[in-house]
Length: 75
Image (cartoon, rainbow, N blue to C red; front, side, top):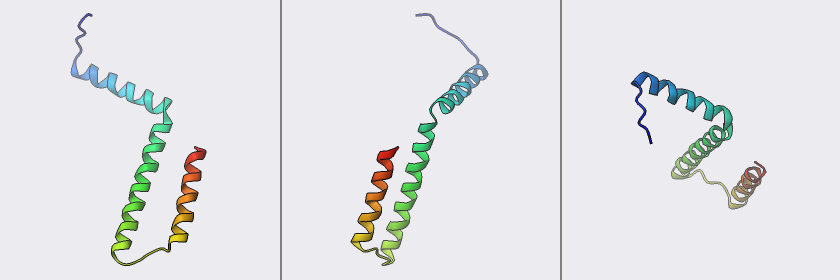
């Protein structure tokens, strides 16, 4: 295998082009990351509300959880 030498600017340009290609071809990666981040935020808010005594009854929770699972399985 041969050694390839490139300047930091060439490497930066190559990395940038590769990153753009991946984001363009695999939009699902960004979508999944955003969905997970939003779920994490929602869970954090729910935990904070729980600490303040703002509870949701089990039936409502299970319905929301079931709906979320069904939506995820459709993706």
